[in-house]
Amino acid sequence: MKDMNKGIVYLIGAGPGDPGLITIRGRDLITRADVVVYDYLANPKFLKYAREGAEIIYVGKMGGCHTKTQDEINEIIVDRCRSGKIIARLKGGDPYIFGRGGEEAEELVKAGLRFEVVPGVTAASAATAYSGIPLTHRDHTASVAFITGHEDPTKDESNINWEKLATGVGTLVFYMGIKNLPNIVENLINNGRNPDTPCAVIHRGSTPDQRTVTGPLSQIAKIASEAGIKPPALTVVGDVVGLKSTLDWFETKPLFGRKIVVTRAREQASGFADILAESGADVIEFPTIEIAPPKSWESLDKALDQLESYDWIVFTSVNGVGHFVKRLFDRDMDIRDLKGLKTLCIGPATADAVRALGVRVDFVPKEYRAESIIEGMGEENIRGKNILIPRAKVAREVLPDEMRRLGAQVTIAECYETVLPESNKDQVRALFEEKKIDAITFTSSSTVENFMSMWGNEEGLKLLDGVCVASIGPITSDTARKLGLKPDIEPEKFTTAALADALKAHFTKS
Image (cartoon, rainbow, N blue to C red; front, side, top):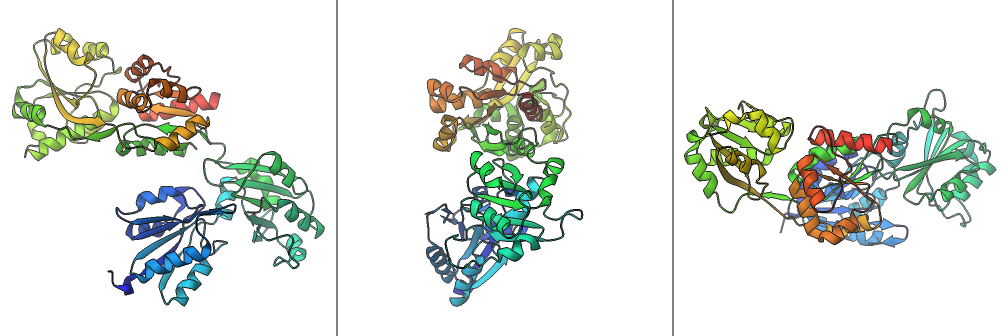
């Protein structure tokens, strides 16, 4: 058992929903924790920071549906802390602003246990900022108040001084008050607030699911109801709401609110996913391939033993570069052993990976079809030449076959393989079936083939009915067509950056 003196609970404000808004300290404490206890409003993406073996406990409470009562949550953190564990208690927003963090801290004090509070970005400041509404402004107001919207309207006495609040504060922000919004409006107007005061109701602020409706105070409850706004949401009352149309920056992003499935291997998906997310997309990472070492290094080792005999080395992917070089180093060889070989790279990303090693790239074809590659190399540079292609175990044979037809000696050396990963199929299927997915991206033939094989061709086609299919290039598109899919998007440059730009252009037009 751990030393009991080491037990500590970190009450961490996890921010309002955008995973980028957690503090650096909050993120670092998650990586150190033995136990992560998280709320409904704490983005589950934070769990990727948890160390392997950490205990993960969900204690979400939403609209009367509670996985744990507050007393049970208190018991969990006290019990784990007493056993000497480090607990990261993730709370949506800030733990001390309508987060019941004070109550949990009191329980820890009563138990004689250590705790620390890590402040977080509260929903009021984040949701309004992401909606284009400044809480204060020199030309409009110098005061702001945060108020709970949960107060029972039937109780005899209110903790809220409506008479002073209604006219005494410039900007009012009501947390979680959708159900009570008619009562909030009535109390404000009855106590002197102008019925024409601009108001906004913001659903899931700072996330790709954010929705904002605006209107005068007297009509805002009706407007929110007719728009189908559901919790979690907050209400903003004040003249600053009138600045939304001028200062809106988030909801105007080209991919705002679009749910886009990324099928790349997990280790490669993050950069592409980040580009899409920066444009406002809600990215669902659903890797259909996983990169693994080959079951045997025999073919690559044989090629490395006679590396000086080759004239050309052809890299078809970044994965091929990485695994080839790793094996090269594992065998106590290095980049100098590539001296004298001409290098062909399929795609700019592959070329960049080779250049990063300090190796010159001799040729990058403009198109990634065998015909254009052959033409660009020149038949005189192929006939009679010895060509090495380190690549995946299973790949298209068009290029090596065409080179052999022209008289080249081509060696295929297996340096990695693609396998089907474990996946969140049930969650993703539900999104497809509910028609919530706007687009799916395929960045290689393997991603298409594996996606379809995961479901079976018939179900795969059914799931993608009405979904925008975005393919990175002609080879991937050809594979998609053979499987019954019709690509809607194919960029002129066959890169993930170009694919993201093509998605933005597509949805901006539609």
